Picture: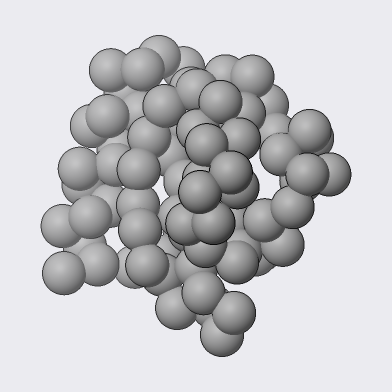
Length: 81
C-alpha cells in the first residue's frame, strides 16, 4: 500500500519545504507509479534525489527517529512487493 499522502512535484521548492526530520519517502514517476522507497532526514534525502534526477514526484511521512524511519521503510517496501 502506498503512503496515504498526495504526490508533490520533486523540485527545489518542494525540497525547501520538506521537514528537516527523519521520515520515509516514496519517489514516483510522472504517472504516479512508485519507483523507490527510502528513509532518512527528509530534506537531505530529497536534495540528493533531486540532484540525481531519481524521480518526478515525491511524498513522505515523518518519523520520530531514524531507527523508526528505517523500520517503517522496511515495512512499507514489503507491502509494495
